[in-house]
Length: 551
Image (tube, rainbow, N blue to C red; front, top):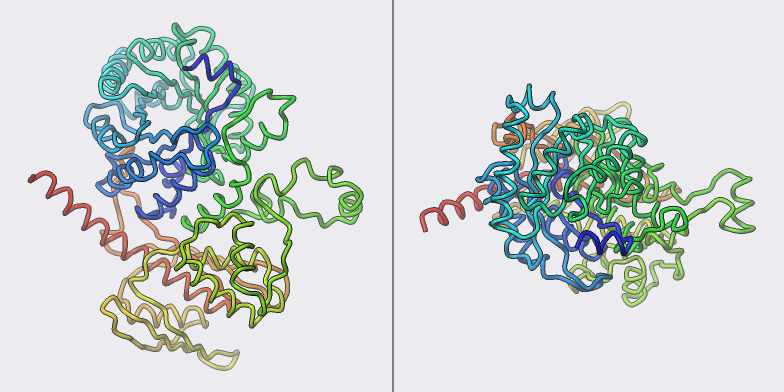
């Protein structure tokens, strides 16, 4: 299989947004959100989806299991006609590996990905084992994984700082034990492109059995070199890249899927390679992940940033008017951005609205979702003369990419000014269907609204982050608010299975409106509903686990 893939010059895309990406501070996703992102990754054409770390918690196990069952069989719209491989991560021990296998086994194509650190600094200070013990653990883990599953990936953690000769030993034993993919991670983003490319080439040339496996790379962005290192690895012979949407991940993040894919797509005469990705789905996928995780994409982000295809300098605009290739090496349509063909306003009908959403890539909305979005569009159109594509995407993000409404925001009323105390009155519908009202004072109108909501909902938390951006230009622009909150009680903390240290769990929220106070209130309700849904989900999953054990 590995030789065929290399001969075909196809780079496999291994997406770890739902595993490594979710480890970003605040990027908490519930099960339904993970499933929806996994569906979109399938539409995007991702070859392998690392759906999670099943041993981490009952919730992580359940998410991976459901993705394997519900998303694993899907083939619609995929270039190669094959379903996406669903992968689960496991440390190099039998308990982790068995748990990963149990989570992914329902998928028609599934993989176990196990890892063990190989750098001297990790062996000495983290694992406290020597090199011989390391090799023994790798052999045992990979052999056990292969006894359960035909598709096994092994990663020597912190390979970028490991002794190359020792890596050759470890990887050779992993191949003999049954590994089918060898992934070389630059776990801490330490290497440079020349170093990393040399390492991949050295390992492929010197590891016994190298031609029988697929070689993979996984780079982090601590020095801003993740994409460069990944492409250097590809040039050295790697035919799988491990990436995340928008480059999210621990610390400074991972290699961004969109950057690697579009580099290969845009420079075919240089790389002489291809991928199975449908590039027109990139923008939609980026915005979905951003909305669900609450991690805003910086405007100058390559490929998917708001300014990626914007031209303000006069000389650039002049060149663009004469020929787009003067200052654009990619067409925006290639990544799913389209120039408006229809002008939407308050007189536009449902058909025109649906057609425009389909052109923007939102072609799988249910009738109920479409109705909700259309009503929101009509309300916005009453306030704005023209509704832009950016406005439509903000509506979809605010209406569709939201958690279940445990508490529903009915309306708010705010009084404020430079010589008055900001006061807010809030009306919410609770989980029991009853309407609750309360009022509060604050240091500003948004704070007053949040204080009033807190008095009703009664969930102590700390606001960690508050961001507000205008979606379009003008005084009537739609504002998007993104916030991050952290619950106070111990239930807001969980153990990181890699470090066994408690990590604070945070929840993001997203809201959009032409009124920034309303947008802020919606974002806060979104975050609170995520927090409450996570609690309910943890209880339900725990009860399911107990029932399964007793059964």
